[in-house]
Length: 315
Image 1 (cartoon, rainbow, N blue to C red):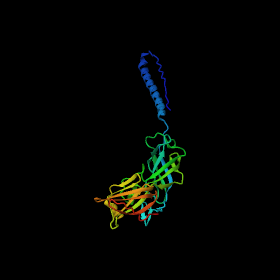
Image 2 (image 1 turned 60 degrees about the horizontal axis):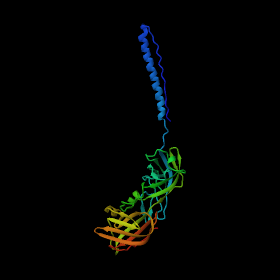
Image 3 (image 1 turned 180 degrees about the horizontal axis):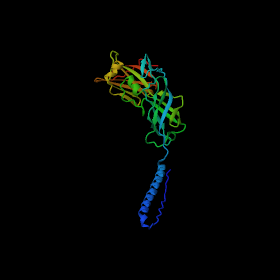
Image 4 (image 1 turned 45 degrees about the horizontal axis):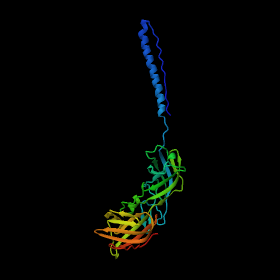
């Protein structure tokens, strides 16, 4: 609210004709005149300060939420950070180094946006407390109460914000754990209390992909294949590992690649592997990979041939 102040200053002068005191009166007149102006300036300054006394919009919040990494049929959750194999079981859990990102849906036009900042697990394990500071985008001039609908609901995602992107994989479990082991908790109910966002339990994250262990061999099974590139086509979509380093096989063993793949059902799958100057392919129809499951598959491949042979499927 703007306040405008008007000040009327009336200076009354009285002519004094006595010569003996004329100069003294003039000096007093000048001092009185500047005193009036000083008082008026102070009054105007006080009024103008009201002009900047506007309500601040809160855009930064501390978020706290208790969450569980949803157990899947293929992997019982253990207390290790990275994805790791225990026999035929793939283990994973929360780690304090992870970051969870928060997405909202604008009330005005139903578009989605990402909060700045992230929330972090406070301790490792299957269940943890996520805590951190998040802020509305700098382009927003409204509070969270006005930004999203009531009841307030948010989407949580890790390990990265943005669209699910599976490009750039190098074929190791550590790489998948760091960049591609996407999980989401959608429609998470939260309460807004001043500068705090508090999650309403239960909050369970759901995996957004299958993880597949491929063991690649020649058609007669006599030699392992360690490609520098692998393309997986499923239906009308595809996923490529374009630059597989030698270090991958130093970690996994020769011929072994781990790949995160978005789930699909009853699709024809074609795999193409580049090994030195040779290309190996295979095709199989009716393949299904379910999100949240781990598969171990052995492949006997031919140069330009079609021979997909699953060795075993977990669970």
